[in-house]
Length: 309
Image (cartoon, rainbow, N blue to C red):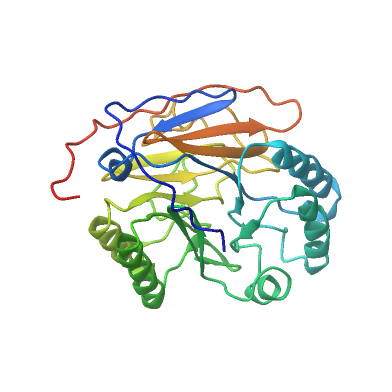
């Protein structure tokens, strides 16, 4: 667990924007906009490393380069959004872990559909669903993937657990980021059409999100290999699929007017996230020959402050 900070908070009259090199998405979560100004936090998001991809060493070699870049990047911890190895290859977990040691920061993984539960428990963490505390943030990490499907699955027990974590976060005056490999957001072609279907927990999850929309900042996902892919049509909560560290594809989603956003940078890499002055900035960092691109995402109007907050 990360150490919780109890530094004093102060109010700010205006939200400030942050612009980084690389691909930058700017968000104003209602929870932060309505709340006292919070001390800045920075962390790293990486996903879909797929060590052992196609039975070759290329993914492992790219992970070495990515880990070095992550070690040099600003961020107190790393969240890995799943598909650590490719195709359930047990011999690749030690390869992944050897390189992970070079990062020099805490790394917290969740399973992807390529990560069998037994192997994940053996090599990475016994608890499949867990909480990581970092200052005023609570990362709720859970496994919603299966090795026999590209769709996501949430049990009633997991839904209840998410709700409990949000209730506790409100009591502790913390904000929540939910991380699970497969997105819950409905999507259809030209998108992947992989998500948590209503009968598999989507409906109940969105009920929880609606109840805690002033506390949940975002849902973080991997799985899509489409660069930054996101939506914000469930209240103020952002739903984001992050770019793969191994490969990404341009499916022409914005040209095809698919709902949401998909900035046109598709090089492999990771994302540095900073939350400061009520703004969450996604700073996409290509690794290698990638061309950085700055892209401010559309924002909804900031709503009036809550009474009695």
